[in-house]
Image (spheres, rainbow, N blue to C red):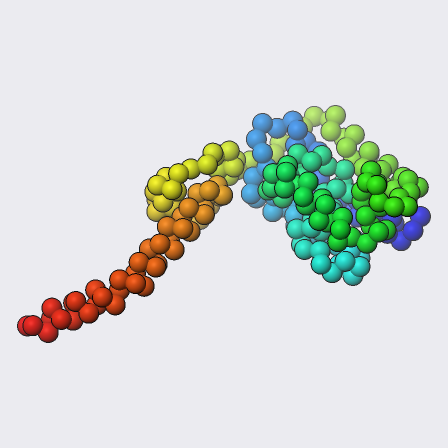
Length: 221
């Protein structure tokens, strides 16, 4: 067993004993998607448990982002594409592109280890056998009764929100401008940014003219 496999096995063992690992194992038994708080907890837990692997990956592939590292940890943990996509808040199509980009950034040894099903030249099965056994033990716990999960209903509701129109986004943004919990949908966020840019541009262009008119008005008195 080489050093990379030892590092990965050690990280998997540590993460498997965390509450966040249970959240992922029982994902399919729940009716709602992961909340924002659960995603943050999973990310923090993985950053801690997989820190030795992250350091090794960054030293060999400096172009990997923090999100790429979390993605690698989820893949190494044996999570399905559906679970991985929800954990990092991207679509299935984006997940396929992420896999391609990450594999291009990884060194050959890590690409073979994390993606043994790929057609990377010289891939070996022996290097990942023990990792696969650890993943199998982890996933087999899904047959146990599901543990209670602390769900954030407001976040789950937002994640299920469909695309909104420009007017709806502006109305919702103004209504919730002092609300600091929950998440907006992607279309709602960018429509409100567009509205903000329009208002800012209008003030920048018309402001001097309005100021000039007001000064002329007051100079008459």
